[in-house]
Length: 230
Image 1: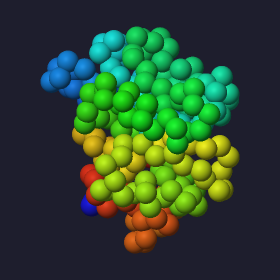
Image 2: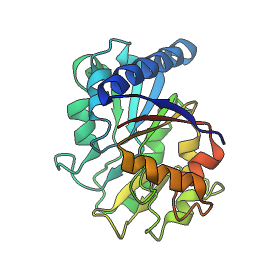
Image 3: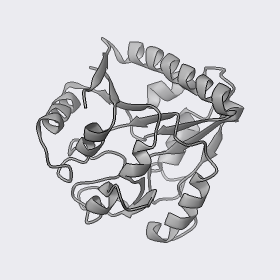
Image 4: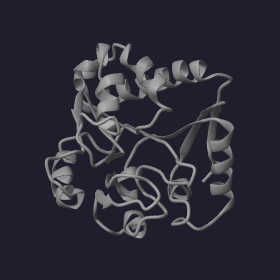
């Protein structure tokens, strides 16, 4: 599908404009359904965006926030996406939001798929806003091309919302939304910064093998808006 692109000269300009766009989408969701849902990704890229969003008073008590994926570590661990979200997004006005963590007390992520699925049923779906990132290998969420689980995660007929993933090129077991769960979103953004990621994205667009670069599976099936700055 054609990729809509919002290109900014600076990360600061991106964060300001992107936060405004997300705010409006969440407000629309609250007006239409009484609640809205926001799915975010971890990593360094969204930290400035999280800060901008946290300072917007949009009725956060009516917003459910969750993650596209999570490393299977304790939430006190610096590798935890939940820790990143709690410290950078769920502060200021956004501290009123309802956060749906993907990490459970199960020792193995595969044992927690049912619990995560049950939690997801409490959220407004389709998701109002999904913000994806992308790795240098073309993975998105924790759908890693190196993992034995990649084909299961990309299976549109699996009937599963979550999958436990063990990457071979990255640390930590993960819990990830599957491709069909990710696609069950009203608005999907791909948030990237830097020239290197732009080149990876172009390689994804130019190729065909979805398991080789899982971001292709999203781009091939959904209207995605790229939000990018150097």
